[in-house]
Length: 76
Image 1: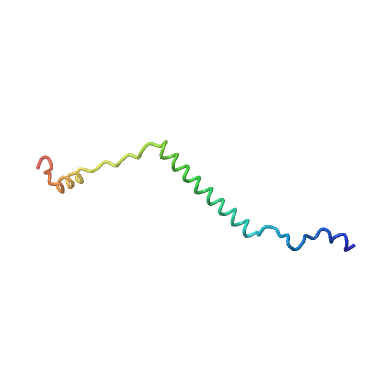
Image 2: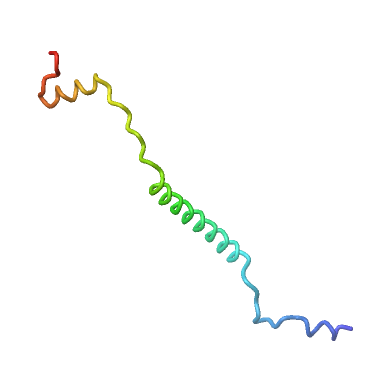
């Protein structure tokens, strides 16, 4: 009875993959996939989306900038 199970025991030098290594490879693979996907979406958005509109500069700020540059504001 014990003889029939002896054939199915793997030799001591044959080992399977380390489960920790498999988990590490899967996690690193998913992280790389996430980063590459984000980069691809970023590049796609830069090409296809129109550029953002700039906020209008207030008259007060324009006046300050002109005074800094030494140009008198109109009407003064």
